[in-house]
Image 1 (cartoon, rainbow, N blue to C red):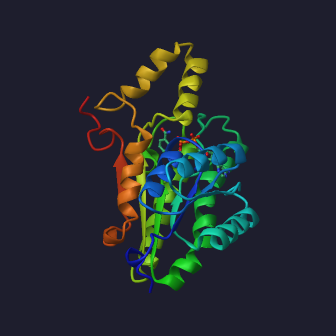
Image 2: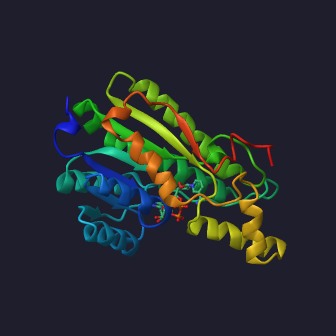
Length: 266
Ligand code: NAD
């Protein structure tokens, strides 16, 4: 069994690490001494984050891959293992959101949401699992959403996918409970990232409101009346992957400025 605290922390793989929440997680894990592998579809984005990690004195590798493509994922994990060592810390962050009412819902939107948010998490976890099982140690953190925990209008596909990620989290936490591997989910509310910028643009185009009013409608969903910052999600991930966080498994931790737990309090 490896004892990561005896030596350097193990390599960490962060999918969707090119911007937003993934970027913040990568920077935080690098600051804690992990060599960090960044993956996303766009090489330019992950190169930029890798340069930020290096400028801060950390070690990073940027490998473009599509998490929905099993062959791509296999190449990604092989490359990370060869260059940094087996990624015993995995953060499944790659994701995408889109909205549509069910009446007239495009089937390709359904399949796309399931593929990137749920199947991608499954494929990358499956590819990293053999090394974790062999080591007798691993940390998997899935970036879900408040949509893993609650329902909301017009996001059926995203909500189904993110609920699925919670189910996968709990099933694997149970499967690996005695294997030294923890599997947890963080459930952000609206975070100040390009994904939320896209939600604002969507509200603007559908309702004709201006961007400020659209953003205010989103922040009004949180009792703290604000967006979550990406580093506020990263701090939870940072905690969950520590060696001494080994008793936390199968958990779903909201990072949502009170939106879930305080729903209905205004
Ligand atoms: P973002 O759009 O800013 O970044 C998403 C990242 O995922 C990008 O790096 C993108 O390249 C990557 N990605 C998308 N599809 C991919 C694919 N098929 N293969 C590989 N990489 C892919 O999003 P974000 O706001 O930083 O969100 C990150 C995660 O947090 C997502 O899983 C999202 O569902 C979740 N989340 C975000 C919010 C929010 O308000 N922003 C709220 C709750 C949950």
